[in-house]
Length: 192
Image 1 (spheres, rainbow, N blue to C red):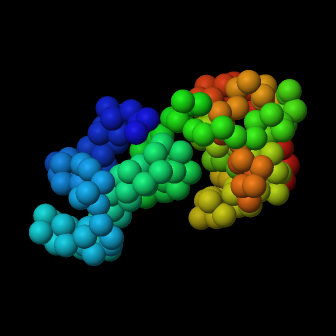
Image 2 (image 1 turned 90 degrees about the vertical axis):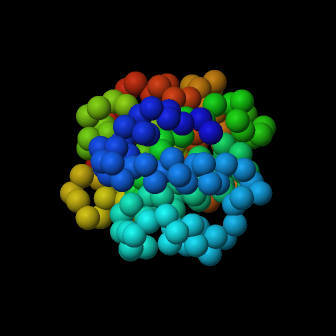
């Protein structure tokens, strides 16, 4: 699934302490496409396994893990990557060209300007994620919408070599460019 299970497990233990064991149970219960169902399937499982409310944070994170399994079984790593909800505790997915179908990378310039809406913390860490866009307005919208509850959403820009692009679909409405993990080492904040 292109995730680091050790860092994800550590994140879960930090967040939920001993209750994090429920995530192992989710993985054991829904370990194949035949076991995945709809929302009712997960709700039934949850009611058998936990006394926590379906309004709780642990439920949301466990349900997102279930949804990630469903996405992976449905469309592989690309679908998992594209539709994960990081704010619900989804693990980071690191995608490579081996996990995507042919795309429109050849339509990009040899060196292409890209943008990303992100937190100030991500920019300070220089540990940039893989999702960028060639559309400044999309990056601005992402920075404002994603970080609307905190004053730290910023827009940065970088130049990427076309060879460092993993995936680009010209029909994607967000103009997303997925870059190789670690390929962006220098990005600068812009006023947006």
